Image (cartoon, rainbow, N blue to C red; front, side, top):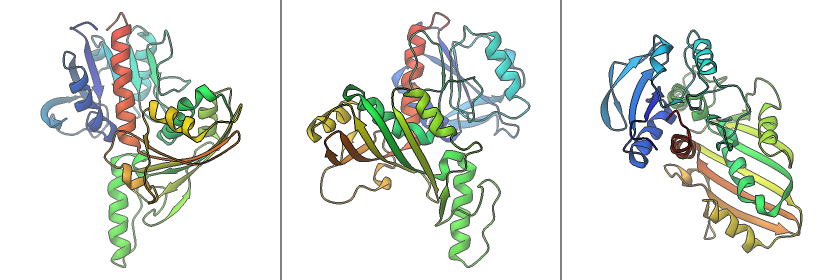
Length: 316
């Protein structure tokens, strides 16, 4: 990695950006960082980023990114800026980029890990991170079919959604009428099917990442803040022992659930490792429950991708 490499991070105070910046500073201290606001209503010029005061100027001209060794997009840019940013990145394919926005500035296909020879990474919907981690861990056992039921928290829609959920909870407990501005409906103490603009989009993204697996997927949007969980039923090419499944999950970074108490999503809050509970193995079928803090998991995965791309990209 070149010592002169500079990472330009858009919206470092977003939910993911706030977790990514200090992690990147710890893992790659030799890399300089530059920050910009890409939102129409950006914060102040001097803001706290990763526990330190930093200059975060509004990105008024995408030409300011020309000297970047790598660009990280942590949130959806303003509507007026998004197309310009996409055009700039298309015109400068030599600049590596990690895109965590939704639905994405970069064109697909989405993935959580850089592909060999590629210097661009478009992250999928955060609801898919636990299913993707499970399938990646079980890859040595050749999964043939997989069905996932995923619990998605409101933090997948950003910090304003989290604040709105808190206000809705206070209103309901006070007997007042909750207000909705960011969330699709009143979510406090409630749940409904994940609000996909195009039904089947998430299942399609997951199937695209694991084309050898026959995929089934549905997600529940729940009135919780950061809890993320997935129930998986995976059919393998041949029977597997429970100990073998546990070992593969542990090697992939999952923390094994121990003890008799149920594993709840809140137990993973604030941790950058997912927790896996193997419920049963019957012949070729594995049933498991995984929980994780999707913000920290995304930040950890994105940081690893940034470091990898900086090490392999000539432009960096």
